[in-house]
Every structure is written in structure tokens, then in C-alpha cells.
Amino acid sequence: MIKTVLDYLEASASKYPGKTAVTDIRGSYTYSELLKHTREVGSYLAGQKLPVNSPVVVIMDKCKEALASFWGVNYAGGIYAPFDCHAPAARLGLIMEFLKPAYVITDREHFDKASEIAPSERILVFEDICDTEIDEATLSEIVAERIDTDPAYIICTSGSTGIPKGVVISHRAVIDFTEEASEEMEFTSKESFANQAPFYFDASVPDLYCTIRNGATLHIIPSDWFTFPIKVLDYIAEHKINAIYWVPSALVVTANLRALREVDVTCLKKIMFCGEVMPVKQLNQWRKYIPDAKYVNYYGPSETTYASTYYVIDREFSVDEALPIGRAAKNTGVLILNDENKACAPGEVGELCIRGSGVGLGYYNNPAKTAEAFVQNPLSPFYRDIMYRTGDLVSENERGEIEYVGRKDFQIKHMGYRIELGEIENAAAGEDGVDRVCCVYKDSKIMMYYQGRIKKEALEAAVASKVPEYMVPSVFVKLGAMPMNANGKIDRVFLNSSEAPKE
Image (cartoon, rainbow, N blue to C red; front, side, top):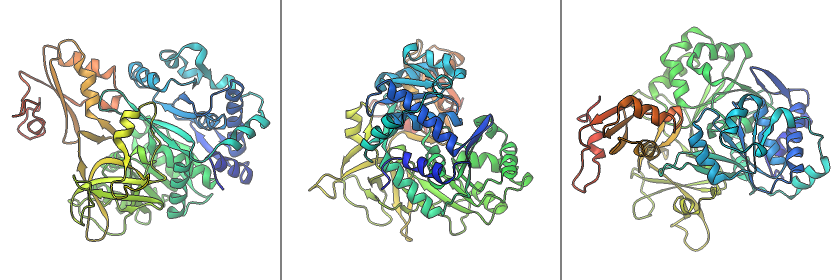
């Protein structure tokens, strides 16, 4: 029985010890090397008496050392929490407050960044601990006591109150997704994945776990390369990459810049995407140049372990059609509920709710938010049956496929990231010279409307210092007065309309 994700790593290291497990621009690890460094990190943390199921933050760019750190934390009985090492220290500090991690693992390159958010005695430098003598007996004892519902990782997402939330995902949830994906996509040890998503974003989960589960190879492509799609495609062609899990925005940029015309990447056989709506126009460009690949549209929030539904693209779509998000993955239940918490009829729009082993354990150190989102299934009130309310509006079409309609609230998907507009508003609202502020998402842009004396340049700089780059609005519009509706609230409907000011 597979109890933890470490079982995947140990099995592949035993079967393929000399095979390349992961490679980045600085070098590579074979499976035996990856296991060795992972267990060295685990031994060091175990020697420090890391409390069971306590978080350990990892601050690095995506690299092979980060993977050794993640699973080293798991070996020591902890929960790894990847951080965006380029995010403002103020935002990372907010996350540190509710995580209260036992340690922060970083590398020499990012030591200064780690020092901005954690005291020096809690910072561990990978280069200094990766040669720790492996304590086989202690690690074996810790791993033997783990159970599959113990937490594996924490992914921090945007929060509507301005405070990010930490989604806790169990080993069992990761294992169930990985088994389902590997079966559906027929992954083998011949798979070669090209990673696109940063490790602090859950879109990277299939890259990591489908690799080690199948004894495959993971190529970590630097994030800044995706500004130059031809460079990425050249790499894919040179290394004969055959599988990718990318966010749609990366696929869209590649198609829009006509890179597919320039480079032959028909080596790609499995093209999977998740995180936001994939436009059919650009998908059709990919299908034109790589017609023999299998294309899969996944759907799922971080709270349900990357993907809960999927649709294997099996027909042609016109540019004005939307791709279905498909059907429930195995061991996953999906409910479409109306405002009265009753099941919707086919064709009726309702909120998508998800149940099953892929549902997360809640938000770390945030019982109130957990209670709001992870709730009792109203269709089975006689025993404990927890489901996650996604806030996504969907309907079931005549084929029995689920189609995405939109959001119930002001949460958006932008550049593959799930973002609460309220967090951006809160970043601006506290600034001197800001009287009122409202963010809307229009024409694929985050727009900030504000009222006050502050200058646009100053407000933009202030917001950029508090939120990640992908959350900084593209447009800042200063208003003499904020429009209000009949209820005395900011008129978001007007600001979302074509009549609202654009500059």
C-alpha cells in the first residue's frame, strides 16, 4: 500500500537508480542522487527534532534542490510550504504569521530574502545541510508512523481579506490524483516532462509527482524563458520532451507569437492544461501544428489537489465555443447545487462542489475560513461527508459534460493564478491619499479604480511592493467620485461595463 509520496521516490530510485530524475539549467540529479539529498535534508531536520506535521517553508527558485528540500521535509514528518522568492517581503511576512514555520530552507542565492522574513536561527541553507549523514533508523521510524491522511504540503493562495490562505493537502490526495493522471495519460518511465509552473503554484503538482511515480524525467525550465517561447520550444525539440502540464496563458502566448510555426515540436504527445479557461482559438493553433498529441483540459482549485475533473479533447471546437471541463476524476464526486443547496437539473447553472479524497484538509491555522469553504454535503446530511464549495458556476450539457460558466464572487483566474481582487484592493486601501478603491477584471486585465489625492505612479508602486507581480493591476484609473449603487455600495456592475472610464 502506498502511504506517502515518499513511496514513489523510493520505488523509482530502486528501479532506476542511475536514470536522470530531474534536470535544471545548473545540472541534474539521478534518482539515487535525488533520494540521497532528500534523505540528508530529512536527517538534518529530524536531528533538530522537527515537530510532527509542522510547516517548513522553502524559499528557492524552482530547481532540483527545491525538490530535495520538499521531500526532505516529508521524511522528517513535516509539511513543506513553497514560497515565491520574488514576492514582496510584506506579503511573505503575512504568510509567516499564520504558518509560524519551524524552519525556513533556502539556498545561498536567496539567503538575504529569507532573512527579511525569518530570524537567522530558523534559516537553514541547503548547501550547508545537504551533506548531513543519513540517519537511516530515525527516518525509517518517522516514515513508518506516517499515515496517508497526514499533510504533505501547503500551497498559499490569495485571500479576500488581504491575508493569504494556506491550503493543506494530504499525501492521500496527491497519491489519488497521481494514480488517476498516470492511468488516464498512460504515463511510463519514458515520459519526459517540461515544467512550466513555479513550485509555489499547484499547477506544478503533476510535474513533480507524475515524474517520481513513473520513474520519468523532469526538465525544469526557467520562468523567464517563457517570455521567449521559441527558446522554450527549441529546448523541447532538442530534449525530445513528450509531455507538458502548462497553464493556458503559457500556451496562448506561444500560439500568439507564432512560435509553433518556427519550431517542430511534434515530439510532444501529451499536452495538458489547467488553471484558467483555455481559449479555443489558440488551442486550435496547437492542434494544427501538433495534430497527433493527446490534449486534456483539467479543472480544479488548489483546495482539491490540482484537478477534480478533466476533459480529453475529442472533437473540433469553433473559436466562439468554450471547452468543457469534463467529468469527475476517479474517486471524486462533483455536485452542482443551486442557491437552495439542491441538485441542479442538466442545463441549469449552479455552484460546483467537490467531494472525495482529493479535497484538502482545510486552511492552515484558519478554522473560520475552513468552516466556510469545507462544508457538510447537504445531499447526505446523515453522516460526515465534507465537500469543498468552489464558488465556480457550471452547468451540465447534453453530453453529460460539465461546462464552466463563471465565478460566484469576485475571485478571478489571471495568468494561470487564482486571485482574490479583495487582496489587491486591501493592498491599496491602506495607502495615504486613497479614499476608495475597487478592482475589476475586464478584457483580461486587472483594473484598479480609485478615489483620492494619491498619484497613479505612487499607488502603482505601493501596490507592487505588497503583492506579486501577476497581481499588480495593468490599468489604474483615478475617479473624482466612486460610482455607488442604490444600496450605497460601490457599483461594481457599472465599473465592469463598457461605459466605465478606461483611463
